[in-house]
Amino acid sequence: MDHRPLNGLTAFVTGASSGIGLESARILARDGAAVLMMGRREDALHQARDSILKTVAGARIEICPGDASDETAVKTALKKAHAISGRLDILVPAVGGDENYYPFLMETKDHFLYVLNRNLVSAFLAIRYGAPMMYPHGGSIVCISTTTVTQQATGLAAYVAAKAGLERLVKLAALELGGAKIRVNSVRPGLTRSAATQFMFDVAGTEERFAAITPLGRVGEPEDLAKAVRFFAGPESAWITGQNIACDGGQELSGATPDFLDDAYGKDVMDQIRAGKIAGESPVSR
Image (cartoon, rainbow, N blue to C red):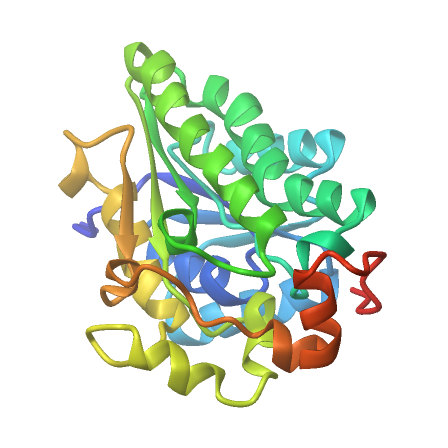
């Protein structure tokens, strides 16, 4: 008999082709859950699934390509997840991140909406259409926030605003879904190495400067966050809901993240922006 703690459960993970999403799918599968992995690129999803199958014997992994901020695509993927065994128990809307530093006076409407869709709307869709599929057993929803909602973080206004909205969504969804035996929580990563944060690591000195403000002395790895996701997904956290918990090596204890805008745009340009002398669209593209 399989005594793994998540045996018989089904999980749905977005952003599952890399980073926190991939490692969350891996650890959920390791502990017995069947997993539906969603991501925008089918080839990357196939590679991600293969990497799990190589490390987790007997894992049941399905994939469904699609954009997690597209309502139709999310509904399709959720139905496929539910069809695995006629139930849905765990939701991990892991899509998120930004792809550039944007000074506030160079922020554009298109980029701002892109970040909101990626970090907030994607989670809303997963919760809105996934929660009814958890009937009658209930389940656990684990979102991915960020430590920067508690810090000053220059160049990331859209991202931090979206994650702050996500944290309120977590609390209000937990309040309304408790009667359905559905728990809703989020983990707050500190700076974590992934494809979504690569633009930050591309700036010289990023890892060293973040490590210096983190009590445990290093940046995060996807596995660090996946372990926290697994805790909230499983029976060990059965009496916890509506919480946004840091998993960041203590990074949020610092009042601010390092300011990389001078490195990204040049000090002369940033001095003019800070003085309000110039504004316009960021020259950095996604």
